[in-house]
Image (cartoon, rainbow, N blue to C red; front, side, top):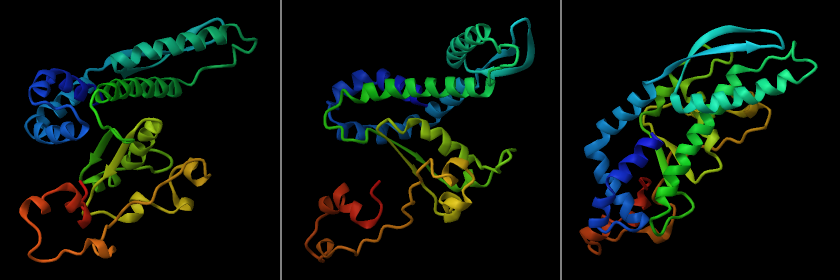
Length: 252
């Protein structure tokens, strides 16, 4: 998705120039309108690109032999990084006195390669956004609507983690980047999104090695006496501003 969004921005560079989209606010407003017309195509392209996997046969090495473990599907851009990491580990093992007993963890290699590939794609997208004036600390917002569906599916795993748990683990790879993620749902159970630490499915969270953030479940509009709305004093242009609408718990 990071790659597809960057390609879309590059493709629309002429349009952005003609419309004098030069600030971060201009870009956000333009993107909101533009996305409505390209959303199916953009998402479809991202899914199709992610589906064009190539078979890679994974081998287990020791000092004298190599033998096949299984065939996997790895994205082309990830395969290159995977091969580099594999070559480094192989050379390290071949020079080790315990090479006969040491085998690399293929899951770790593939996971690390995939994470590096995603971070590089995100970095390239952030680089494009940096050209627009007025960017604040957060440069990209990712939102998942109807997020409660993610908590209903539990792929086979020993910890009974849901798709939401796995997605959060993936998003943790981007903690060093100026990205903010929002999960939206009007039909969810709070415990599924923010369970107590002792009941968390992640061992890192239970052990205190990962920090969780409490979700915003409701933002009331009557907590500040300066936000009083007096009848007859506001015009349509006043109540349609983002600063005004943000008072009512729907800042997006």
